[in-house]
Length: 255
Image 1 (tube, helix red, strand yellow):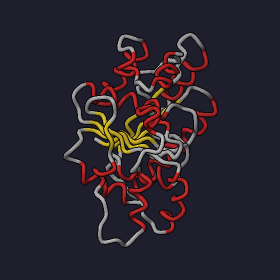
Image 2 (cartoon, helix red, strand yellow):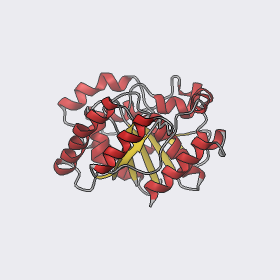
Image 3 (spheres, helix red, strand yellow):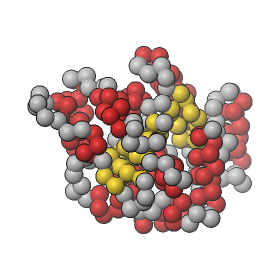
Image 4 (cartoon, helix red, strand yellow):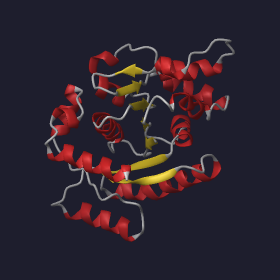
């Protein structure tokens, strides 16, 4: 199963959700791969910490070789790196992805990621793809390559307004490029149960028939420690409330 975590709005927790779901999958015995398509590389740094600095090869090199006519090109598995966590691997990001984008768009390399991932289908049980906060070449590549799309929602009115056009974009990509793409659900993030507005917004989305997942992710300062130490929640503190919420979310998307 290949899942892409996507929202055009920044700061909604895409990288954090990607890494923590992948870490849970790996902890349960699944061979798991994280793809970090965001030039900012937050998912890469979350998993590798300082080891992410200067790491080669990256997704930038993978995409770059599609622009040349060399007789020898590396297979995708040559770009995959292990992480400190058993069964969890990463195809890392690079700032160079931003520089490559216009060249890849002009050469219409939009299906290259899908084709490359087919080469490692037998090596991994699940793939989680982190995306930039924009509907650009890399996000479109991910949505074409994926089986399912998870949409983080951070419980404010701006996010709600953006959600409708986002859902339309995903449906259009499904119709035009990837008929098998499933909208796996809306992930409610930074949820504050005691505040009136988040509950109201979520209920309104459900009343409108949108696929809101029932496993909510709370706001917690513990996630900052998780980021700082480059240790996913399931390994940092498996009993923590947020860790258990991630487990519940993983169960919900795995049904």
